[in-house]
Length: 193
Image (cartoon, rainbow, N blue to C red; front, side, top):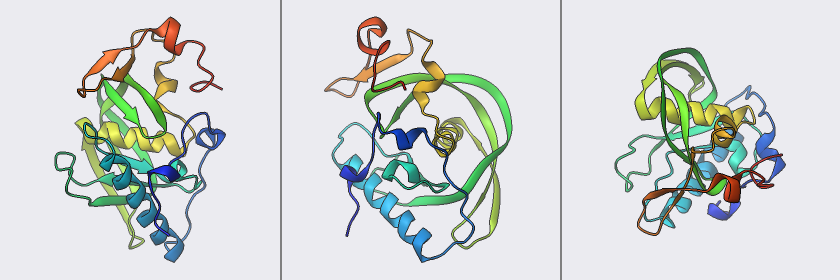
């Protein structure tokens, strides 16, 4: 059975607020999970003319495993290659704090200007069961921080909930427009516990 965009859970689903469990073995179940995540991400973006699926965490298809996938090429929507990171963790934050726009497949119709470190060092396990370490900066660093947050039950809106000017929506032309915090965000039972 193919996993689709309809299998992606969204707020207020409480599973998005739970911590994911460490993966101890790269087995067929994990390989199937990565395929399911990729299928869901690709199907989601096929329905969105102005967006890409930059990455996805397993919890977003309702699997509480510490697995994330990251798109290999952010500029080419036709390239559906993703890199899987098992048990990813940030071992060092570097650079400066930069605010930039983020969206999330599990947060419908809300985008935010989120502060993140501009550079990070990451440790994870690849699908061959080997430890990998790498540096990420810019957009890739932002994406990985966003996905690792998911494995800890944290969403991007949690980083900006006190910032009344950080929330946006995407218009029909693919442009981000500010949301009215008092009217659209402040008391949203969808975004907050």
